[in-house]
Length: 183
Image 1 (cartoon, rainbow, N blue to C red):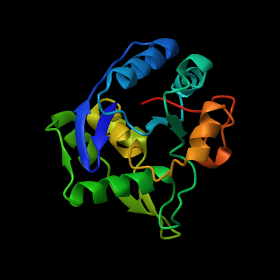
Image 2 (image 1 turned 60 degrees about the vertical axis):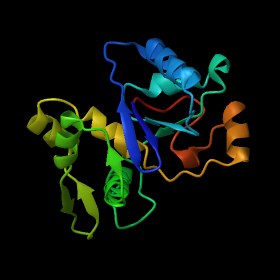
Image 3 (image 1 turned 180 degrees about the vertical axis):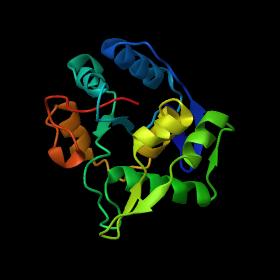
Image 4 (image 1 turned 30 degrees about the vertical axis):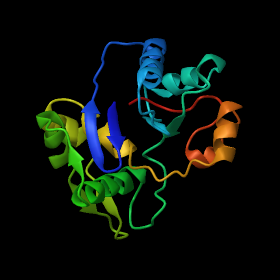
C-alpha cells in the first residue's frame, strides 16, 4: 500500500501473510483511521487480490472507495502495449513533474528495474514482471502500488453511487463478481 497526495508518494505500508478477509479489514481500517481519506483506493485486479476487492464490495465496507485495475488490459493510449506500461509512464511523468517519494531503497530499486522495450507495432512495453522478480529476487510490490495510483479513472458522483450499489462497470476493469486484485 502506498499513500499518495498529488505527486507526493509519502507512506508505504507492507503487510504479508494475510488472507483475503484480513487484507480487506486492514485496508478498511487504514481508510477509516486516515485523517485525509483518499478519493479512491486502486487495487491490482490480477491474481490473489481479487478476493480483497470482492470482500471490500460487500455491504459492511460500502464506504471504502475501491477500484480494481487490471494492468494487462488495453491501454487508453495506443502508444502503450497495456495498462501496466501506460501507468508506469504516468508514474515516471508524475515523479519528473516535481514528484516526491519517501526515501525507500526497495521502491527505488524496483522503479529502476522497470525497463521498457518497443514492440514490433511501435508500442512501449515494460519488461516482463517475471524478469523483474528474477533481478530483484522478490516481487516489485512497492513500485506496483505506486503504478496503480497513476490510473486516470475519473470518479464521478454517478460512479460512486453505482459503486455503493455494487453495479460495477466493466469499463473500470472489473465486474460485479468481484474480479479485482491486491495492492
